[in-house]
Amino acid sequence: MNSQDEIHAAPRGIALKVRLTLWYGIALGVILAIFAGTLYMVLARGLKDQVDRSLEEAATVAVKALEERRVGPYVRFDDLVDEFPELAVLDKFFQIFSPTGTITIQSPNIRRRDIPLSRTALGAALAGRAVFESARFPQEPPIRLLSVPIQYEGTLTHILQIGTSLREVEEMLHHLLFTLLVIGPLALAVALGGGWFLAGRALRPVEAITEAARRIAAGDLTQRLSASQSSDEIGRLAGTFNEMIARLEGSFRQIQRFSADASHELRTPLTVMKGETELALRRPRSAEDYRLVLESSLEEIDRMTRIIDDLLFLSRADLGEIRMERRPVRLDVLVEDIQRQAAVLGQEQGIEVLITLVQPATVLGDELRLRELVLNLVENAVKYSGPGGRVEMALEEEESVARLTVTDHGIGIPAEAQSRIFDRFYRTDDARAHDPKGTGLGLAICKWIAEVHQGRIEVHSELGKGSRFTLILPLAVPAG
Ligand SMILES: Nc1ncnc2c1ncn2[C@@H]1O[C@H](COP(=O)(O)OP(=O)(O)O)[C@@H](O)[C@H]1O
Ligand SMILES: [Mg+2]
Image 1 (cartoon, protein in one colour):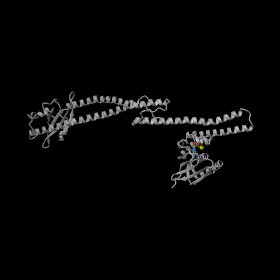
Image 2 (cartoon, helix red, strand yellow; image 1 turned 120 degrees about the vertical axis):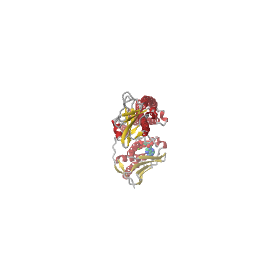
Image 3 (cartoon, helix red, strand yellow; image 1 turned 90 degrees about the vertical axis):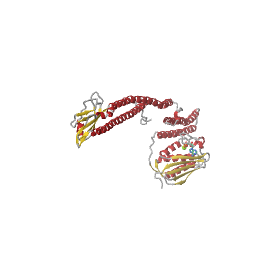
Image 4 (cartoon, helix red, strand yellow; image 1 turned 120 degrees about the horizontal axis):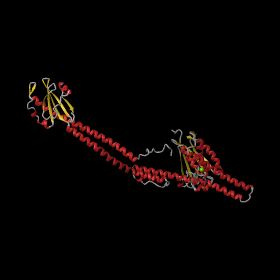
């Protein structure tokens, strides 16, 4: 695994469970704080508005009573106070000031005798405006005041001031604040506890997966996670994990089989050489006999060299070390070249190699590799044809691909083997009997070359009747 591919792990030390709970707690704390703050503000506002409205109502009644007692600019104040019993009941007091701001009359329910008229109130009254004020005296609940000017023919004669204590409002708000401050943290604590519990529950399957993964990592690739049945995130994780293990197991087995096959294929020629050499050394032989042994050894050495060359090519291909050209390649020219070459090869075995159809087609790629690919296919077709057989090559150009077919009428490939013939070292039993010299690596190389050219090879074959290999490559410039 590349270091870039490594999954970014959490900072060490802080478990996911703790972080989940913390995030949850912070989010909930913020929500609670916003909720409590809004509730407090809305309520405080509403209560104060209510007080102001009741002051206004009382002022209207009081102003009306004063107007009724008016004699010209003067007002008869005697027994005025008795007329407002509801003011006392409602915990409202009133004062009447002269336009200079001195107190003329006060209701008896006033608790403080010295609430003077503020400059603001006096100024507003002179300008003919009513004004609300809040006032606070040491050791006492705050009060709310409404000052209303009383005019006679455009001039200020009196200032009426209605006041009430804000004690109840203050007490209610204090109560609310206290409750919020106690209940908020309490709710947060309970929620954090619940969050901790839930995070633990949600993460338990992850721990189970970790445990199982550890067992699998310890060596047993046949193990699978059991949580993969459910379709939730954890189930999908386990499913993906299982697929990954299955692929790993597959490649692991492939590597094992590959090394076994490779050793076996290299061992066979060595065994032959060893047997023949030992036999030859058992007693003195003629020069001709030695020559025969050496010739046979050379054949085996050639075969081993071929296997090793092919293996080297494939492992370099696996490592991405094979350089590929990307140039226009005329496939029609290539097919004609190879046909000439293969015709010579086939002649020795009485096999005819011919072209049935060739259309011009150009692909992008590496000419040498493509030549190797097509030659491999044609060599196989010749090799696995009976004497007197016929191999046909055809090149057709379709919409966006070139389609090159190599057809023979030879031994054919059993259906169950058709998917495996591109595997390294895989050879059918018929093929082994027919040609003991093959390596089983040719088609693996063909497949690789086709794939780096964004192409593919298809095979259609019937046992005993023949095979058709089709190479499909994208055209350099699509036709039409
Ligand atoms: N034209 C063909 N006819 C029959 N079988 C074939 C043909 N081409 C390939 N095969 C089968 O596919 C196997 C793998 O082919 P290849 O990789 O070229 O190895 P080799 O040619 O060394 O046997 C062959 O051993 C044979 O079983
Ligand atoms: Mg071959």
